Amino acid sequence: MNKVAIVILAENGSHEAMGRVANALEFAKELQDHDDDVKIIFDGAGVTFIPELANEDHDAHPLYKAVLPSIEGACKFCSKAFGVINEVKKTGTDLIDDYDDHPSLRSYITEGYSIITF
Image (cartoon, rainbow, N blue to C red; front, side, top):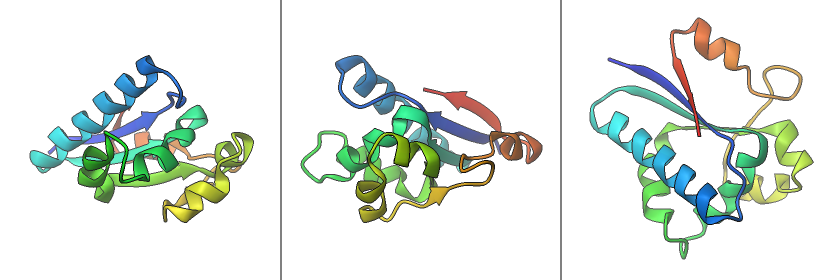
């Protein structure tokens, strides 16, 4: 079984970024479908995608919903910095603050996860 941590850094607002997020979620779905251990972390500007993807009218919502069990959470610091912390909280997404209010990517490495960024 593979152990993969997918870190989404792309900021909502461009066609290119939406493509990156769609590819990240599709990769996560593929890993899930093969019973791999996958964790999705929204970090940096990537936190801006959570409220959009959680919207049922968004084109990528079905894909987001399919990988929801693998979403570990969103960076607490970045959610504040990008002004979306209240919207992220409304989706029920966990805020991660393991290391200086950020996710500890080191902890994933220590646990044997490969880290892939989008």
